[in-house]
Amino acid sequence: MPFTTAQLNAIQVTERVTSSFSILGSLFIIFTFLASSAFHKPINRLVFYASWGNMAANVATLISRSGIEAGVDAPLCQIQAFIIQMFMPADSLWTLAMAFNVYLALFRGYSIHELRQQEWKYLLLCYGIPFIPAIAFVFVQTEARGRVFGSATLWCWITVKWDFLQIAVFYGPVW
Image 1: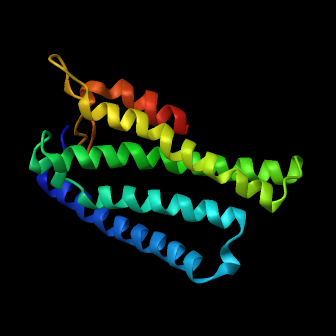
Image 2 (image 1 turned 135 degrees about the vertical axis):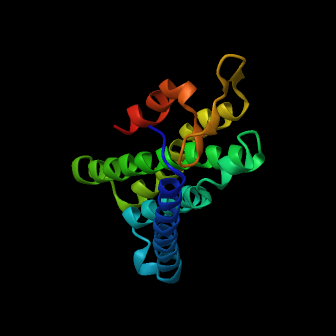
């Protein structure tokens, strides 16, 4: 059963309110990190790097259904879908990087300097891996299924006709 207009509006308002709080939280982390060198520890730097992606993802969810309403072929929809596909999975990769940092420090005896040397690799992996499907999906379409990115009810993302990709490149790896 599809959502009613009233239900979609309620979801959209909720989505925008919670996205706004998340953006404020990300900005707080970023400004706190930049304002005080006391926060420049390895784990805080990883949270700082992740916050940029979180903020981007929340800007995309703040757009909410406006991307769909602009039309699934519109740049707004395709950009929103790209940002969601790029930065939402990156968050779980940053969590993995943080856990790996703890492992390196506790079980491999890495120093702060050695941990810092890993950060460029984390940046490359955490933002590089999700970039590949995100950019590819902007261009992929078939006659039978249409574009990969389009209406996903709440925002533009991977459409129902391509739902196996939701599992393959988002839910599966995150789980």
